[in-house]
Each structure stands twice: as C-alpha cells, then as structure tokens.
Image (tube, rainbow, N blue to C red; front, side, top):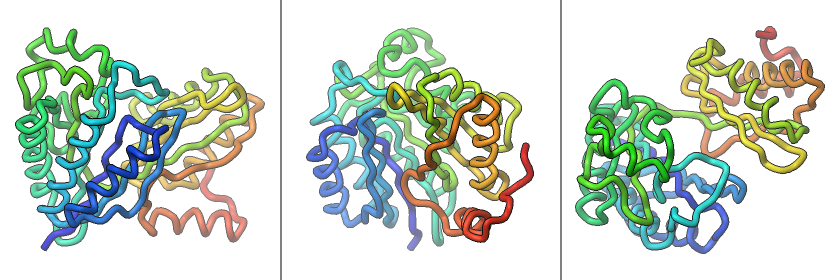
Length: 287
C-alpha cells in the first residue's frame, strides 16, 4: 500500500484551538500528523500529514470542513498570499506511491470538496489540467479578493465548481508534486525592498538559482523575511541558499538573523548543511 504526504496550508495562524481541531479531524481519519506550525504574521498554519490513499483523501476533506466552519476570508488579514480558507492542498507520493496516484487523489479531493462544501477548486502542479495552471503563483494570483473578477474570464474559471468562490472560504488550490522544502531566512532590517531584491536575484524565474522560488515578507518594524520554496534540494542545496542570502544581505549592510525550516525536511537535504556548518568549512562557492 502506497504512502503519501499531504501538506495543507490553512489560512489561520492565530487561533490555536482551530488548528488543534484540524489536527484532531485529520487523526480521526487514520492519517498521521507528523508536524504542525503556525505563524501569526503570515496568519497561516502548515500541517505535514502522512497516510495511505484512503486516509489522506479523507483527511483532505475533513480539513476543508474545518476551514469552512471556522475561517472567514472576508475578515482575514495576513502577510501571506491566499485565496482560500484551506488555501493549498498538495499530495506528494512517498514510499510505493506514484505521481499518477497523487494526481488522481488531488482530482478526487477537489470533486468531494466541491460536492460536499461548495468550495471551488483549482488544480496545479502535476495535477494541473492545463499547462498555464502548473504554477501555484498563477493559480492564486490576486488572492481571495480577485476571485470574482477572474471568474468573469472563462479561461480563469475553477477546474471544479461553477461559482467563483465560497462566500467565506474562497477557493482551494489542490496539487500533486514532489517533496518541497519551505525555508525562510530572516534579515535584521525593516526595509522590505532589500528582501524583495534578494528574492528577485535568487529565484529561478528571474534568472537566479535553478528550481528555487522566493518571496519577501515584512515580519516587524526591524525584521524582514526572504521565503523560499526549494523544489529540488540536490540542484539547490540549503547551504548554498543561506550563503547566497548572507552575501547579498552583506552587500546591502544587513545581517542575517536566522534560518527557519517549515514542516518536514528529507534527511538528505540536511546532510550538506550539517557538513558545511558543523565542520566549519565553506558551504558552496559564492554565486
């Protein structure tokens, strides 16, 4: 029986009782919650869940029910882009599982969430039904507030559902993908443009490091964050990212405060960091 990972992003990072209820709903399906993290600035929580096909599918629908019950995007404000109460729902094949199976799970989850909760769904990544929707950023562009306007364009309509959005829960992006590492680096400055400049320099779409995605966020008056999605840690190892940020920040007179991993990370991705820093050798040549 194949093993899958489910990494839902909930648009709730301030009410611990809601996230705890979501965890209990997942565990009632037989799936296992491996990790949970919440961020009040982003107003977002990420769960890492593992299970077989049946349990992760049931967990996805159970999470959608919790999100619809408790999250109202009309009053939700946070730093992170979002279009749904259950904003992102990727299925990841692990042991004895295939990407085709993960795609089938994503499509079935979308069908069940729409039929049960009337939340429209967009498919992205390997589950996308058109090439232009492979990118999550494209699917989520404009967020919750832009869903009605986007729906006016037939090319932007949801893959599942015949309304632009649920009135309070918006729409959900459901995907299938390989393992992804979420890695954040905080900088000792309140100047968001410095973080944006570093993100633009390093992300692949603007000519930076291969397979790397990046955004910038303000955390406080004296802290900003460069937030990375590492889609292939072998092509772009974590130490290389950290040292690139350190170099680019230093050129702007800014210090790096810390790095942060969100959710679970493969051991193979941590080994280069352990070798680089615990043995005090240069991680990678400067970019």
